Image (cartoon, one colour):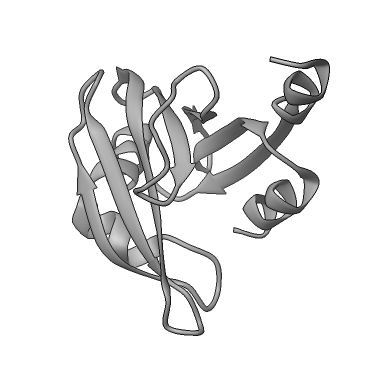
Length: 139
C-alpha cells in the first residue's frame, strides 16, 4: 500500500443525532430489515430491499433506488455486534466489489441513552475521497 493509498483511507465522518426511543428500540430499528426499509437513505432515495444476518461475521445488504431509477447496493460484514450499544461493520458500494476487510470502509455505530431518547453516533472511516465523504454526510 502506497502512502497515497493510506491517505485515501484516512477520511472520516462522524454524525451525531438524538432519536426518540431507548437504545433497545433504536438498535432494533437499525438492524431489523423491515424498519431499515422505512427510514434508510437521504431524501429521494428509497430502500427497496434489506437483508441482515446480525452476528459477527454475518452479512448485510441494502438496495438503494436512486432518483433516476437505478439501484445502488450497499453491503458488508458485521465485525462487532453488542446489542443495544454498539455495531461495527464493513461498508462497500456494489455487490460486485470484493469484500476486503483490510481496505473496506468501516462504520461504528454507538447507541447512548439520553434524557431525550438515544444519541446515535455514527463514525464512518476509511472513506476513499472527499466527494464520497460529502455524499455520506448528506445521507
